[in-house]
Structure formats: C-alpha cells, structure tokens
Length: 317
Image (cartoon, rainbow, N blue to C red; front, side, top):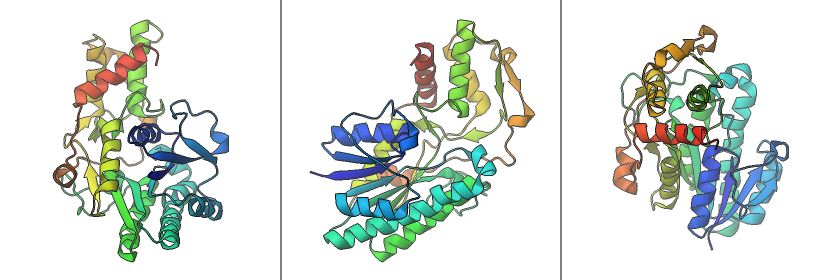
C-alpha cells in the first residue's frame, strides 16, 4: 500500500487532499500542531502525528520511521497580511522548514533505496509583479511581499533537490477557494458577509482593494493536480490555474447576485486600512503543461465556485 505524509492537514487543501488520497486507497499520515486544536475537516482515517514543522530533527526522525512513498508539503503561514507583520516566522515555515523537509525526504530515499515523490505547494505569489500575463513555469520570480519571498525560496530549492535526485515537484497554485476557506481570506469574508446581509444580521460588507485581480479556481481541482503531479513519471513543475483573471469586485458581484441582490454596491464599503502595502498585479496562470501532461482541467467555473461558497454560508456550513 502506498503511504503518504502530509503537512498542513488542518488547512483547506490538506483536508481535501486527505480525502482524495484515502479514496485512492493510500495510507495517510499527517503532521499536526498540538496547539491547533480540533481539525473539523480531517478524515478520521488519517493518522495524526503531533509536531512542529520547525522541529526539523523530530520531523526527519518521523519521516525515516514512516518511510513514505509520497510527501506533500502544504504547511504554510498563508496570510500575505500576516507576512508583513511576522516576516521572520513566515520565512522559517514557508521557506526554511520546506527546504529541510526536502532534505529529510532525500534522506528517506537514500535509506530505503527507492524513489520518494515530494510535492511542494508553491504559490502564484512567487511571480509577484509579472511583466507578462499569463504566467507559466518559466516566468521570472518577482515576489512583492514576505510571503511570496519565502515561497520563492522553497520553490527554487525544489529544482536544487530534483537535480540531486529527489523526485521533487512544485505545483504553482493560483488562488483556489471552497467553503472550507477560513474567514480571514477575502473570498470567504465576502460569501459569509453576503449570507449575513441576506439573513439581516448585517447591512454592510467592508472590503479593501476591489480592483485586485486573481485567477480563482476550485480547491478540490487544485488538489487533484497535486496528486496527478506526484504520480506522473517525470518530476517537474506545474502551474495550476484556470487561466481567467477576476477582480475582487467581480467576486463580490457574483456572490451578491447568487443571493439575489443586484444593487450590491450599496452594501459594500471600502476601508483603505485593508489595502495591502503592495498588491500583486494581474496574476493569471497558463496551465498548459498540467493540462497536456497530467490530463488535468478545472471542473468548476468561477461562477460555480462563488455559488458553492455562498450556498454553504447561507446553509450555515
């Protein structure tokens, strides 16, 4: 039986990945911070190991004990805003700890004398301020915030360890959403806010930059790409994106429209304090390689993603 080791199990992607792997008959083990508390979306069949990704010695010992066939590193401090407040912590988790996990996976490969597939959840934020759009696997890295800088550090390391012999893969994930997205993210803030307005619990939704554009997909689709990439014979990097860029304004309009509110702008107030110090320009991905080599493609449109999130919040899920 294939054994997979997952970090970031408590996040949106981690829960969907665990479900997917278990459905494929994979034995799933995951690292979970003891302080994280209950993991509401984590399947009961996942074997959890309490630990901290920054404790590289303990994590290496655990990997050598488990000897996984596949390692998925999804752990990250995922808030760009938080990365401005705690850049050192973000670099440790998103950059340094990810590189140490690659080194530990390489140690497992040497110990068991068989391949270990390593998947790094990279981010479109590594492109930061792109000079061209859409971006592909060869686009220059130009991060514009500490989160992107840390992710770029780990992204570069994937190529280094791949040259060393580790089957290391970077999936460059563009924005991807679902009802499991935490409320601190703008997309969930919007859909939850719309639900509150419909129920009469609120009258106004407060947002920042309405013109920021992103390539928004469906989280389970992006997880599907991770698994396909891990099992492809050739270890290489993949952009995972829809290829369509939509603004926060369009996301809000779609969310309100699904709830039956057409004159949505009267319910929205822009707060300049919510603006990022720098905001990436047009982040839109070219996923030609993933579609061609992995047979991957999105299963939900932008409108369907927004609708699913609004419905979940209207139903209290």
